[in-house]
Length: 158
Image 1 (cartoon, helix red, strand yellow):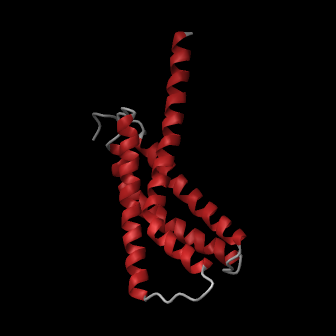
Image 2 (tube, one colour):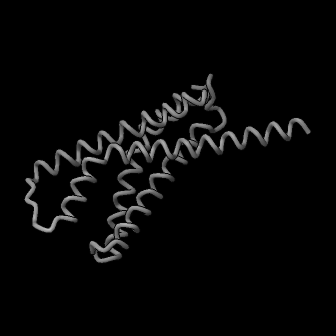
Image 3 (cartoon, helix red, strand yellow):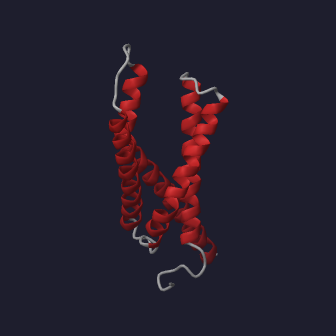
């Protein structure tokens, strides 16, 4: 009976830690993208047209992407380190490789979702695009989590 209870407890801990890891990654992405999100909010809610140079927009896009990447990696590492997880180094390393792939996939999926709404600026479009992008990024983090915990990927594994 004790083994079943301890296995159940380990399963609950892993599930809880997975949720915290996904939240840390998505929170990091959101914090990193906040400069671009503020600009988009200002552009879409302005009553008058706002002229922004393309170079400024490009710098904000690239800077926000790099900041989002770094914040997601740092957030995941911090959550796993605070929990004393034995995969606190392997998980962010794998995320560093797969997050750009997930971000490109999320971008393509978001553009596709916006296309289904005719690229309109109604709230339903924004909700759908945000849900699709968040879903793809969540799937990316979960995939990283599973790969980092695959058999043979423990503390002593190479």
